[in-house]
Image (cartoon, rainbow, N blue to C red; front, side, top):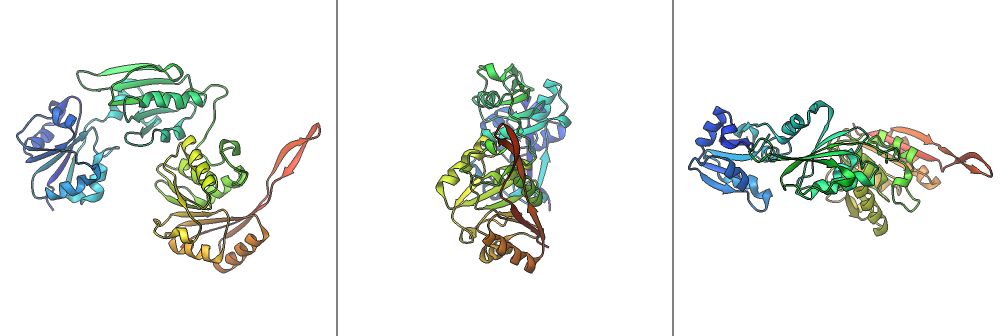
Length: 399
């Protein structure tokens, strides 16, 4: 198949910054698609010009209508790094596409800062919830962030200051590689710059002695979550997530999500991990939503309903956690929906739930574990061990 669609990355240096081969592709185009800024950056070769469609999701359909013509899509920097090229490649056969990468914002920002790209996190909040960067606030972590507008650096500065990272150094880099390149430096707690709307933010996280430590390894402190007392406690949650095995882009069904502690930690533990929390009570769904926002995973999806009826129409999961309400019907529906190599974990605290769990384990195999946790608590003027309610855990992998 002969490629007819070229996706071309372009920088602030415009047409002259393209390689000779890529310039020839643009000059030979019959149709050029891109944003107003991209059209301004490219020399006018006399091709038909088309702006981004509205809604943007209609882009692939519009491109397919142009099949058979010489089409160029202009995008910023590297088309396959947090850019439109990945979306196009998911919806049009990659054999029909040629990608022409350009030096992107991350490479330029790393060069301006003198940072090794192997030793930092690259993130985007462009057109996405800004809160999702919260999960990456760690001591001594360096972040490069594609922002969503001129107000984004100030929002991120507030997130940093509220978590004890107010001394973190921040630099906003705008129009990199062009005549109007600008840089703004400051620290999070006193950030007050007015910056251009199209910018890249560099953050060097510096923690105060009392900073909140929120590692991505499961087992966050219980008091970091809003809850009504009914939640999977810290130690049990860490073991539960280990059995669920969070992976990049994987989807979890959290059945009876409550305050969302398991779903939130699943999403924090792996890049782009997703979760659907199924919970019949509105007050608990509200707590789960608040926890997801505060802990940097605002894309947690919450479904009103109870299992197994609430499973209808949901995307097949890579893992399922059943924190309560286990029954034969719930298990059978969950197991049927689970993808091959999917992980299912069920926790039981009542004798009745444990009896169901034991019966299912006898029929289907898997691993049974009894978890008992004791925490040191005040006992008069001294301290003693206070046992928490024991948990029986069943886990298995769908082969």
